Structure formats: structure tokens, C-alpha cells
Image 1: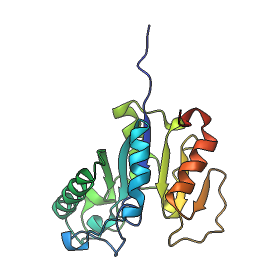
Image 2: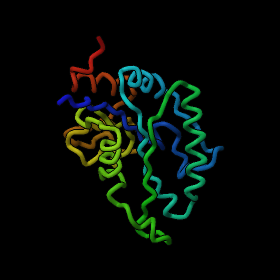
Image 3: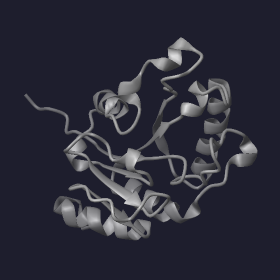
Length: 190
């Protein structure tokens, strides 16, 4: 029996990686793209990676903005990326906040990064090979609790001296791309 080959994914954090993190951004006026990531996204997309945005959005659970605000903002973000020929397969978000005034946002802790819930859901829905995939973020919470998933952090707010066996900080996205090629030799450009 022939099995369909599993797909590769590039998981991307939103705030601080795709857009400027202005502190719970949710208004269109807060949407400032970080264009330095565009060449990396296009390169990975051309190499056959499906692109996913994986974002914690506790601002919803905290009551700073609504899910509707989030979806309006996200729709504009996806449109702007599409205008740059960057196509996001799907966005996953986690509005979990333990002390939320709304009980529905007190549930779902398994989906809040660094927990793997959103990633396992994406892998199941899209038949993804997590061992051939990577996560790019800018915070320690973007180091996902899945040993087979390689996680790379762009130099951001967190300390550079954090040590984790599958995570390093990088100064730019080209460094991340080259490091990923070294770790997964079968990804090398032909």
C-alpha cells in the first residue's frame, strides 16, 4: 500500500517575527510587517514548505481585545502577506489565560506555546512530518515541547545565552536557513 508522503512545515510566530510586537497588537493601525523575513519565507515556500502562523493570543483571554478583533487583524495580515506572494496555509492561535474572566478562555492550556497542542493539531490536519519541519520564533515560549521539531529563535527580547539542545538564537533569517540546511541535509538546494 502506497502512503502519501508527509509534508514539511515552517511554523512562524506572529508578534515579534512577522510583525512588530507593540504589546498585544490587535488594531490594523498596529500592523507593521517585519519585511526582513520575506526572503526567508519565500525561499522556504519555494522549497515546498507549508507556512503556518502559530501564535499565543492571551490578550483575548485577558479581555484586552475580542476574538473578532483578532480575526479582523489576522485577515489584514494574511492579505498583506498574500500581496507579497507569501501564502499562509493556516493560522492557529491560543487565547488561553488562566485567570480569564471568561471560563472558555481558562481552557486550552495544552495549546499555549511552548506546549505542542497547536502543532500536533496542524500535523494531523495537514499530514506533516514534524521531523522535517521547523519553528521560528523570538521568545523562549517558541521552543516547542516536541523533541523532533527543530526550533530556531531570532535575536529578540530574550537573552542570547539560553541553552537548549535544539534551539539557538540567530541574528538574521539567512543564518536560520543555513543552519536548518546543515541539520537536515536532504533539504539542500539542488
